[in-house]
Image (cartoon, rainbow, N blue to C red; front, side):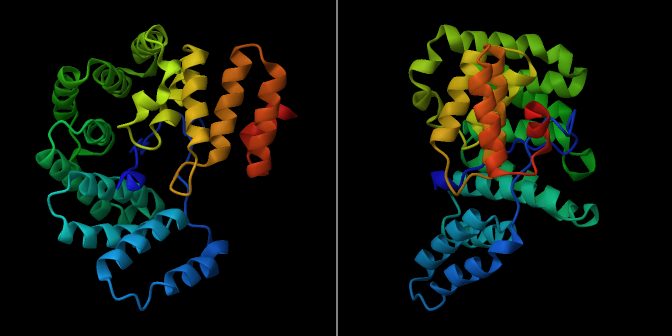
Length: 292
C-alpha cells in the first residue's frame, strides 16, 4: 500500500500560489491509453486483485475519481487498515481542488472524516497526523477545520517525534502568525538535520514518510533560505525515487534543485536543472524566467 500514500501538502489558501507546486491532474491526451489498460482487467475473475490493479492504474493516470472509488472498495475488504483511510483522505483533498468550489464540500468533509478514521485506528501514524494538522488549519470550520484541534495534534506529535513535531509547529505558526514567524523554526529543524548527518542516509529518514515528503522538505528549504545541503539531499532523493505514482510534477523538482544549486553558487549546474525542467514542461514559465 506504500505506493498509494500521498502527502497531503494541501494549499487551499497558499501564502503565494505561485510558489508551490501544483498537483498533477488527468491528462486528456492519455484517455485512450488509460481505457486500453483498464480493459485488460475487464474480465478478470479475482475481483480483489482487479480492484488493486485498477487503483494502481488510476493513480498512474491521475484519475482521482476512479482512485476514490477503488479505495472505498478496498476499505470494505480491509476496514481496519489505517493507511487506506489516509490515502483516501489525501485523494479526496486533491479532488476537492480539481472540481468547482460548489462541488468541493463533500470531498472536504470526507477528507476530514477519513483522516480521523485513520488516526482512530493508528493514533501514532505520523504522516496522517501531519496531514490532519495541515487540513485542520487550512479548511473552514464549516467543513471540519479547527486551529484549536490542530494545536492539540501538534503537541501530540511533538511527544511522538520531536523533529516532526517541530515541523508541524512551524506549519501551525505559519498559518496562525504568518510565514516570517515560522522561518526560525524551519531553519532550526533543517540545521538539526544537517548536524545529524541526514544526507548520509536520507532513505532512513524518508522510509516511513509519504511520497511527496522529500519534495516538501526541499521546497521549504528554498522558501525559508535554509541549509541548501539538506534541501539538495531531499530533492535528489525525490528525483531518484520518481515513479508514476508521484502526484507532483517532476519539473518542479528540477526547478527546486536549480534554485538550491544557485544558493551554493553552482550556476552552471543550476542552469542545467532549469533546462531539464523546461524539457519536461516547455510551458513552465517560472523556469523560463531563470533561463532567459
